[in-house]
Length: 409
Image 1 (tube, rainbow, N blue to C red):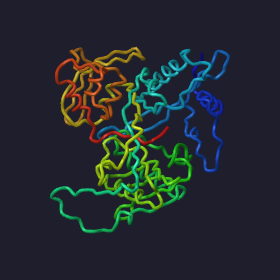
Image 2 (cartoon, rainbow, N blue to C red):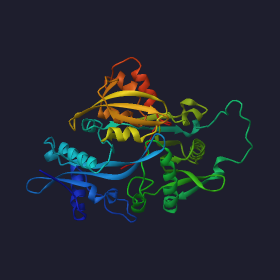
Image 3 (cartoon, rainbow, N blue to C red):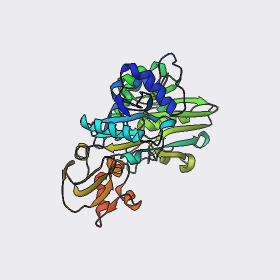
Image 4 (cartoon, rainbow, N blue to C red):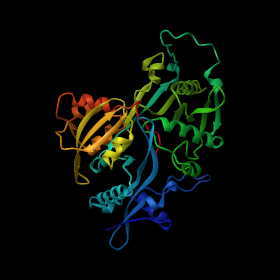
């Protein structure tokens, strides 16, 4: 079997192969673009070929930036379009492609890879761990009254008009530049968020609101008229579905939520991709007004260079841990001393006795602060070798805010 990078001439073969792997047919191009594969980078795509040259597998990576705790932006390879024809599964094709790709990424100096998993059982064996989570919140409009309590001791603010005074409804086709600019501001401050390169917006490659699918967009503006948030939505059969809500702060999110919840002739509002522990549920007069469902993993993280990855992110507690890390897929086993002082980390090889023993995928899960190390200790994934090690790890790996990713790729 041969695994090789694609060229521009291979795009049709690549697209046909990955669709055949999932038993689907490519969509018919429509006016305005919107084909997800148009954002693929040919020099970052792989084809697996049989000895006689038949394509049987595909894999690709996107060039993204990932926001780490501490608002640090780092490059991250976004794994996508992974597929093997049904006739060639369980013959080592996927493992060969993954090993080839991870080795090449590391050789190019990349130290993080991320993905969205079609099945949660596939990618753990390749060293990826779930690192951000998302859920759906469904709110019946007759129970949707927001009653945000004022903080104790805070004086009443002067009346400035309703939230809706700051919201403008536009069609998706009218506000592409606004969406791109607001999203970019948001993702730079949100741990776990990925960049959306300009070519994605220009090609309209992806899911709403990037795609050309018809949507209304509620755009929120600040006191001087600068857009600082939006909610992309559609209405069908009395249900208003919000594809995504982007807000530069919680007050903007609340204003957008109030707007969609007050939409006429709507019986319920469905917020897709609500972050864990989001304050919206606490803002309802009836705490039970919102029904949480579809709670699932979203972004999975794989570390390719542990010291570089751990020293890249921001830290919020001082301390030190010895991490014994097993990477069975790449056949590596290393031990590092992680020392954090004044928000910066140092990570060096050591022969000291370990505080924690963990798999490289478990390190990916705790890396962004969305999964507590103690949870994985209790689950039997991580082994703590001394009392207090898990508690210290929780404090060290926590993020300044809960990581969340909205981008689909």
